[in-house]
Length: 378
Image (cartoon, rainbow, N blue to C red; front, side):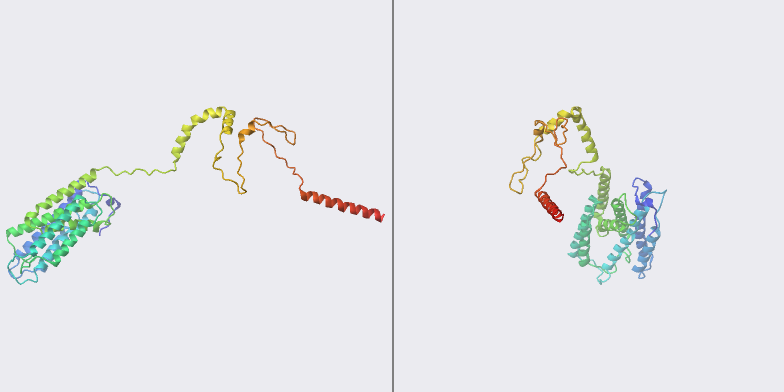
């Protein structure tokens, strides 16, 4: 794999030069089909070798798809070209599998069989899987690939009847069959390349999604290799569907999500709330005495829900409103409270307790005993 710079993480589909590798890939696949036909035509009778034909096709595809064709510097060419290169071994793999079908047969005549129905039914399932992918090229689902894989398994277990000395790598065909192979290769290359471009995202990391794009494109286009000639126009219809689906997806506005509402307010909401309530606070701040009276007359908070005390006596809440109507009482230091609220000042002098009185009595008795003892000594 070639090393790419950071700009290849963005695929610019608006640049026309980005689609030059698409034409390069289609031309390379068609060239492989032409080489397979010419290799069988030019070899003398009885000297045709499937291995030699495969080697020539592989060399042709490798040389033509060695490096991408560039015109300017389009973003994402290397990312797309990495998946397009895999189209050559995919096409050659279909030729090899088709050739293997006929290797073990000794019958040189074509015979009707019910396995033809099974084969074409499986190809129809593969075509249906290709249209499933065409309708949603960027959808993260493997159902079209799994459906195509199951159809390939059915074909492998019950292949069509084999014919001796027949196959794309060793059969010398006429002009009609040669044209059939070249047209089939063109349809396969075009459908595979278009699917590669449609399945590639605009933002991607280099080579990270190459395998995913390859398997999706292969499952969408492999049905062309086994379809009958009059089915090939469906490849053009599938290309139209996939291009329309990608164009509609690109023109859609980006998805926006509704913000999750939470109970906690943001700082901006708190600022707006404070600004809105600032006008209500102005008249209250203008007359603080009236506002103080209003607060004192209000019912205390949780007055009805106050729990009883542990001693079985109901808890009595203090009504601060009564303090405004009771006369102010003099305190021990002789100072009268000033203002509407009369708060009782606390005194640091504590009343004597029972223990202190007992201590005083004991001290007096001790002093009296000591005095009597002094008088008796005199």
